[in-house]
Amino acid sequence: MLNHLHIQNFAIVPTLELDIQNGFTAITGETGAGKSILVDALGLLLGDRSDAAWVRAGADRAELTAEFSVEDNRNARDWLEESDLASDDSCLLRRTINSNGRSRAYINGTPVTVAQIQSLGQKLVEIHGQNEHLRMTRTSEQFRLLDGSGNYANEISLLEKSFDQWQQTASELDALTQDAALSDAELEFLNYQLAELQQHDLSAESLKARQIEHDRLAAGDSLLEALTFSIEMLDPVSSVDHDGVNSDLNTALAHLQKFESLDSDINDASKMLQEAVVNCGEAVSSLRIARDRLDLDPARFEELSNTLGQLHDLSRKHHVSMEGLEGVMQALTSRIDKASGSEQHRIQLQAELQKRLDTYRSAAVRLHTKRKQHAAELSTRVTGLMAELGMAGGTFELAVTLVPESRPSLRGDDETQILISANPGLPPGPLSKIASGGELSRISLAIKVAASGGGDQVTQIFDEVDAGVGGETANAVGKLMKRLSGNSQALCVTHLAQVAVCATHQLQVSKAIGEGSTQVETTLLDETARVDEIARMLSGKVSEQSRAHALELLNTRSVTD
View 1 (cartoon, rainbow, N blue to C red):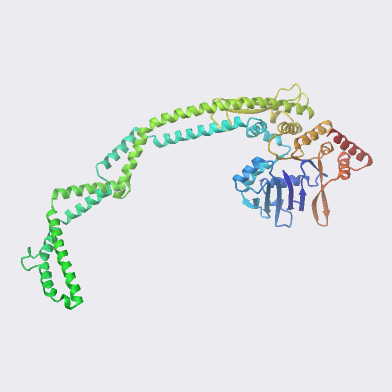
View 2: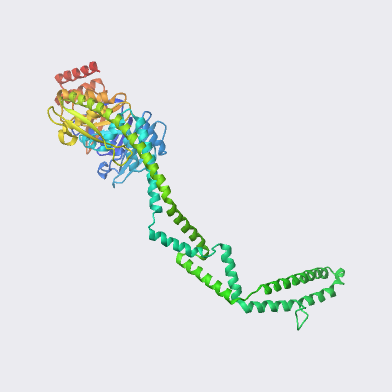
């Protein structure tokens, strides 16, 4: 519920602090005093489009702040918690509008988007203007009205759960169809590409071994010559022209060994020469093995050259390195397997989808039954309230129709339509085409009252919805607004004394004109001041006669309450 409203440099308001009470508050004052400015300020706080024209002349910016209690508003509390904007049981909305037209919005001190403040605002306040009936023509609003006032939350929950399950399976089936669908030509081409790759061992070890063998064969005679020369240089047995490096090492070692004990450096050198002799011998052995293994087969060289050429061609074709061909082959295998084996999975998903559709349809029928029953009760209540509002003999019907073949939705398989007859003897018709503006405002009020109670405590604001009514009808409008406020909160901008006297509180708005400035002031009226304001509303001026009439109306309402 709305606790406090702060307005600064907004329109003709330099500054205004306003505490709002629970119950039914009538906002009254002379025509043009600025009553609707309060509603406009709240509208902007709740996400209405901003405009530089709202900034008071001479000011840099307008600032609006509203404090709400969300203790008894579960939807608002949940939204704040989910958005990480919660602050105990209170909620502070703030919006600034600069003189250049730019605005900023805040929730509990945190900057937010206008879309966020709109989303939360819908859970805090409902503002009803003279065109309220236009909103009631929207299907979404009719379902909100119907389901928000009905006692069938379990059926709604089951419907939403079954829809989510159906949608999940439908999405899986769509994804499978899109991902696995291949024409015969596409499948044939993928198999051809896979066969090209499967001709070769594409493992990293195999590719490396092929490349090394190819390079060794490419070296050919040069490699054989190098191996033979190295062996002859190292091995005295194979040397023709000299004894070989190994023999020289042994000779040098023999000369030094007898002097090892005389000098530590000679001893170190002797040890190193011993290791060199051993290493030289092992090197000669390895070189001989390598030379014996060398097979300069031209046919093998040509075979490897062809194979590596094919692999390079495949690398260019698939736009990967040679080492990446194995991954391409695996991807092709997976794609072909998925296309070939998806049919069985598709059959399983189709069966599961039908099963979940049946569950959804069953939940939709159960919800339809509850909705239809509640719609009938709601229609009866609204029709009765229409009679209280001067439309005796008129009828209201919220029709709920089951469309079982419709595509599943989070709302179920129902369609709604509001049909009314504002006068006896006239056939019911669509809401927007049957009644006059004044009748539509009263019907909207009747709908709101009939559907109220048992839900979250949302502040209801009515901006001159009682225009065009008077007499007993005005009395009925006031009573209904009082009933609507209940233990919650309703505010009404009104020119009708019959409505104002029904209010729990009365707030007077006046315009003070000074030298070169105009500003709006508000006053919460006490009993004496309220009598004077009601008297003014009755006759346009305060007189003994009008005060007596006002006092009579107030006393009558007190007795009735």
